[in-house]
Length: 362
Image (cartoon, rainbow, N blue to C red; front, side, top):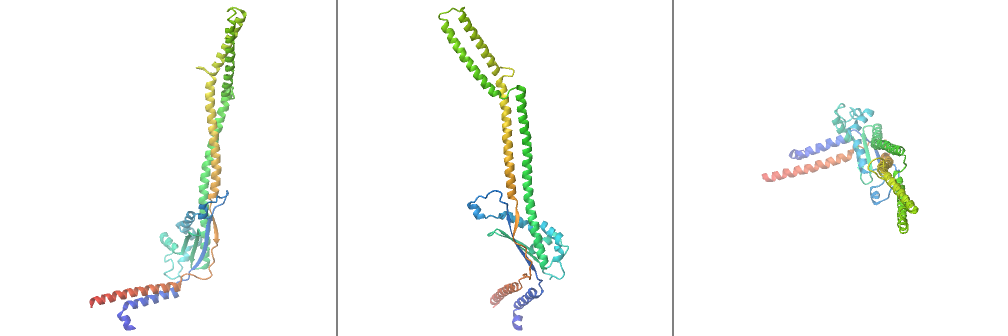
């Protein structure tokens, strides 16, 4: 055997490496306790949900995008700082009793190094099929692992709710301001319309114009009737006859009344009804537009409030953080066997290369 190892030192190195690594995993590597939790994101159903094919595929829980946002926050430096402030994870992972390959070597390590170590001990993965976030927290003490996982869930839920509430509040606040501004515009438009009616003494100039048009039409009909009668009388009576004089007087009176009514409706200057009607219609259209805009803003505000409430996310825990009873990490036998297989495989590769070189030399 000694002769074999002397002739093939790489096999000796392979055996030594396997013994050393197996000794590390079997005897020296510190126990790591794992606390696990599974969570989903849910939104309140304010309105009856619409069942369609897309909802059947995507499921009823939170979307994968929201879960990825939660995962990113749980693995962020901000979360690391909160955990360190609450639970002193620097002190826990830098304990001197932990083996040198597993512990945090420098308790005062910069945040970049600490975050890199944090990512090796906190595993947050998205299960795309079940749409569930699976969390694993590794620590060197079962109580510490459970406490870290519990705080991780608490801070994650608070962050998602705060983010949703902030967005919802900004949307609702903007629409509240718009509704208040449009309400003031509506009040001003109505006040202008009422003042115009009071100053002109007319409730509806357009209605008055229509009434005057009807009166003028009736007067013109009467005028046409009198003109026909005058024509008939002129066939057997003279211009100075009492009947002819009376008919002429009536015709002149009707003409004067018609001119007067037409002057009320339209004239080049002054407060003619057609001018008043045009001004009134402009004010009325402004008031109507302000009312419609205000109504649309109210509807948008209500819809936004409902939609904002629906967008609020709640972290629902499918499995609460477990309190580990025995260390499941590291996988000592698995790691030792895998390393041994790799080392032997590399030994065979080196042995093959050595044989090829010897063959070429010969």
